[in-house]
Amino acid sequence: MNLHVLLVEDDYDLAASLVEYLELENITCDHAANGLHGLELTQQNQYDVLLLDVMMPKMDGLSLCDTLRKDGVDTPVLMLTARDTLDDKIAGFSVGTDDYLVKPFALKELLIRVRALAKRRSSQSRKYKVANLELDTEAVIARRDGKTLVLTPTEWKLLLELTRHSPQVVTREQLMRAVWGDDTPESNTLKVHMHKLRQKVDKPFKTALITTLPRHGFVLRNDDEKNS
Image (cartoon, rainbow, N blue to C red):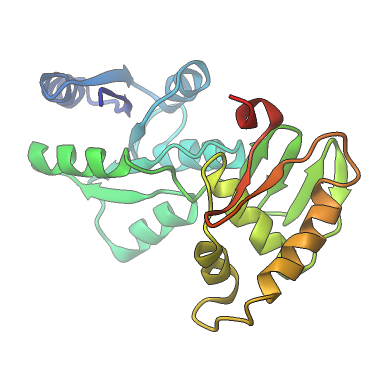
């Protein structure tokens, strides 16, 4: 898989070295020298991983990460920083960072972390959108076609898990673990809650987003994806 990453770093010498190394490893690497330019590039391109320096002009890495997460961007973020205290790391994780790499670091370690992060989407996004369904995880609000859906806490957890993984299939076991953890409910409990969720997410609207795949699980995706 040919990866495409964005490096936002104001140290031009370091940036040049990182770009050259990553491209030798068949990873395409765009570069921005400040946070605002980095934000523009994320709006213009799709990236597998974002590499953000913490201290940068115009917009620092923490502010950039926070802005992206509030906009619903779920691209994994690897924060590059010379700061290695626990408070610094807590600040990074609080705005949606997925991983930290403290300068100076070995290029091989950077490569390993980039490839690991590229295999998944970040769970730090604050907003999710599938077709005309939108979830705001900060406000804990779900809307479809602009209308607020009144969900129970259990229904919210089920819908969030389906939306996070969309358009992939989510197994019954995954859903039950996301909602009830190790306290597995009776076998019919999930079926009952999914039925109620469908009544709120799908029934009032022209098209259904939630589909049951017998012996596999459930999937939330738009009608075009179902027929593709």
